Amino acid sequence: MNERFMMRALELATLGRGHVSPNPMVGCVIVHESEEQEKNGCPRIIGEGWHRLYGDWHAEVNAIRSVQPEDSHLLPESTVYVTLEPCSHWGKTPPCADLLIENRVRRVVCCNDDPNPLVSGQGFTKLRAAGIDVTTGVLAKQGRQLNARFFTFFEHKRPYIILKWAETSDGFIAGENGKQIKISGDLSHRLVHRWRSEEDSIMVGTNTARLDNPQLTTRLWPMQAGFGKNPTRIVIDNQLSLDKTLNLFDGAQPTIVYHQVLNKDIPERPGVSYSFALSLVDLVEDLHRRKILSVLIEGGTALLKSFMEAGLWDEMRVFRSQTMMAAGIKAPPVRGNLVSRERIGADELTIYRREYAKNLLNLPDSSIEL
Image 1 (cartoon, rainbow, N blue to C red):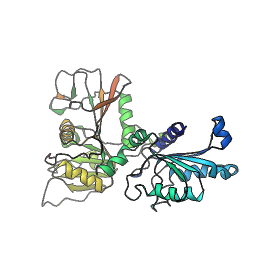
Image 2: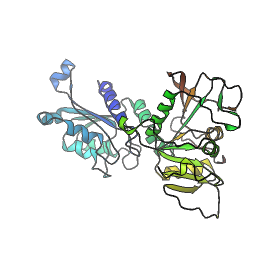
Image 3: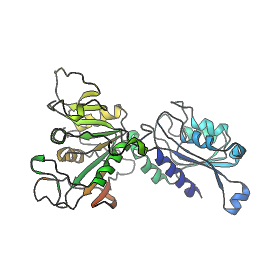
Image 4: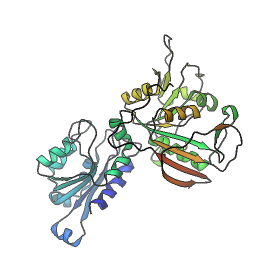
């Protein structure tokens, strides 16, 4: 029974994807379970909610508000299924643990403890002290995967890093001398724009910025579809040599430029900030300070390989087209555990995830330079 309703709460949580960062995605289901219903195996959902937007009400609040007035008296006989430990502190909204206590719910079932030190078990302590029965660890693996970005941010002290590229069937990522060549199909391009809308930031290297002049927007996944948020753009420009007329510097969305130039006056540009970083470790530490929870790295090959060699990656998403190129720049080698394989139009999409030793932080090689 617990898993059935928790699965529903996890489904609801995904509706906040791309809208709640740096908060986690959270879903909540309130189930009335009288003795008669338990005996017959037919408990009734009386409320549902999810965290819809950063700074807005949390999942538990929205779930309780969704309970019809004629059912509000059932809350003391109900179980609250929530995907993450209810918060115990004042942030942009009041503590959710206090709200559950005020409504005298009977039981709380949860996937995961909140890794945020401001919560970190204190929500459960509050609930238990108020006499509420608390069960944790239900579908814990699924809960951690749902909020992999949130857990990585607090446990690894860096953003969740996704490496993405498209390659030909014979393993090339670009033409000779880095020439841009259309490899994947239109449907794959549209999916990538959706992915962009779900992440905090998107990164490219110097050569990709110079040769491809990308916009790094979500223009193929418009706001009308319920997404469309443009991520923060990140570009590596060690010597500050990129032409300032490139799309990356158009001021349409926030852009961070990482460089290695000392003692040089950098002119201010609207929407563009500059940050000094000698290594990838410096870079990801700066992103952590900026509260950026995720990075989608779209190339080029040298940048992708640098993150691989530094051990700074969590997921790989690789499109393989039916195109043959015979010569050009070779794609990086895939690593990690295969998670899924599917067809996206004429392309094959494979997704790999990195596995970590239990309770072991990812300690990158600090000598890897940008």
